[in-house]
Length: 448
Ligand SMILES: [Zn+2]
Image (cartoon, rainbow, N blue to C red):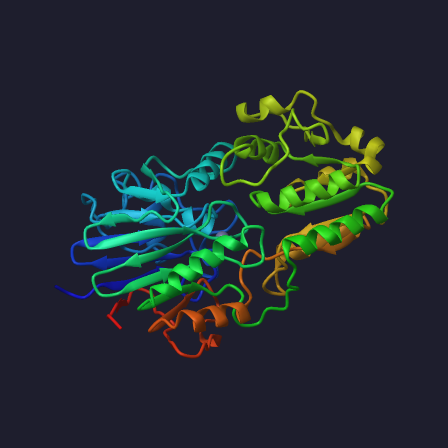
């Protein structure tokens, strides 16, 4: 029987797009299945220029933007492609977390293939499917129990919850017939669930893994400040306290921890926290669900308000939040009692909101990776035009490069594969052989 192997079908020299195939005898399982953000995808598809919904795989294969894997895709997605539909040849897909670059291509996968994920990740995917663009398809969803192994022939997969900038993230320990593999997914050690990450790393270290697959988002040049969630809270408290006017802010729409942090800061400052309809929907979907932090609930928590942008048509999921929603006029008059969250795509609201000059704008997202980031430039133009004072306050969802070094050294894996990074060659932990993987190459897993 051939030895077990790992093949990287995405996430190679790029941040995002993880797609990892692990084979052992007849078993073939995948970890994550998300689109690559950059640079390749953006070379052909941008904004409204997207693959056709009638022939998505054909349009992605044209530019080598999705792997050519027989027996993986649904009949419907394969329409028109020069890859024949075949009955499933993949036994299961395991998802680490609900970020788009890890789960965004699930929709193309054959509905017969089981998809394993955390209960909290399923809650998030459902909420995103209802209130956002795009879906995840119909699947045989299998909900994981933390630290409880899933056996698939020769393979045993143990899911370990980890901390990341979205609840419900998992790392995995995979036992193959030759040795074990540890895969981090995306993770950090400085967030509210840091203890989970330590639990995963302890379990992974005990395995003395043959292979360690680690994310490396912050390996290489990393000019960003190293805030923790707690220090973000402290800084936001100061901003809110120092202002006697409206305070505005923005964060990632699914970063529940950050939304909770900003809300609690708002409470301390005796301001009402004002969120979009989309955030209101997400909060009501996750409120009280196990695995999620305590969040304010629209319609129940008194100091949480929902901002209603003028729209011609409202979606069904938006309707429950419209009663009692506030508008630009309300924000203009009550500004000093409010902390208003505004997604960048809703910036035209500023034209009606007319925030007082010099109002603080809490930018609670990661700084752009490159200086030619068009979005960052447009954002700054809006802030300049309205003379808003920007405060960049963000705790990353990822371990720093230095932390990753010490983790790789602690695990002493025979081979370490840095993925989900643009700088795999800048990663030099001691006591392990680093292999910067090439896309599509099967790397054997050999017993130590
Ligand atoms: Zn992520």
